[in-house]
Image (tube, rainbow, N blue to C red; front, top):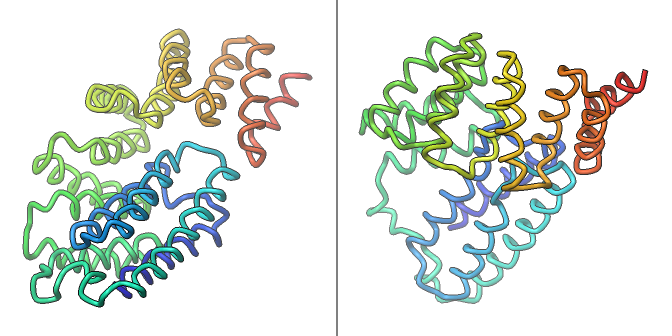
Length: 289
C-alpha cells in the first residue's frame, strides 16, 4: 500500500509543478485516478477506506474540462483525502490495508501501474518499457495498448501511435479513450473528415463527453461548417455551461463567421472560467479593434 500511496503523491505533485495543466487533453489524469482507486478498492473491505477512495474518484471527475483554478482545488482536495487515507490505514490492522497479496498480484498489472506512474511524470522511455513488458504477457491488453499509443502520440510519433491504437481498438472497440487517441492522430495528420467521424462515434458511445463536443466543434469550424460547429458546441454547453474550452471554441466559430459581439461574449465567459486563457484575452482585443 505504501508504494501505491507514493505513486499517487508523485502524480499529484507533478500536476502542481506543471501548473495544473493536466498530463493530456484527453483526460488521462481522470483515468489514472479511476484505475488507481479501483485497484485499491478491490483489496480493501474496510468501510472508512472505501469511503475515502470513492470520494477521491469523484473529486477527479471532469478534471480535464475545468479551469486551472478548479483543477488546483481538485488537486488540493485529493491531496487532503490522500493524507486522510494514510491516517486511516495506519489505524487499521495491517492485513486490512493490504490491497492485494504480492503473490496474487499479476506481473502485467504491476507493469501497468509503473507505466502509468512514469507516464504522468512524463518519463516516457520508462513508461514505454513497462507497457511493453505488460504486453509481452498479454499482447491484447487494451489498457496497455491505448496508453502506449497515447505516449507515442504525445511524442509526435504518429505512425507508431496509429499502429498501436489499431490493435487497442481491435481488442476493445468500445473504449472511448482509445477512439479519442485515434481521433487526435487523424486531426494532427490533417485528416479532418475521418477525425470528425471518430469524434462523432465517441459521442455515440459517450454522449456526455465534453471533450468530444469541443474537438468536434473545432473540426467543423475548420471544415467551414459553422452551423454544425455551433450546434455541437451548444450541446456541449448544455452538459456543462462552465466548461471554458467549449466557450473558447464557440467564440472562435463566431469570430470566423464575422459575429464579433457573440465572439466577445464567449471569449469573456472563457476568461472568467479560466483566467489563464491568454488566447481568449487576445481575441477579445482583436474583436474590439
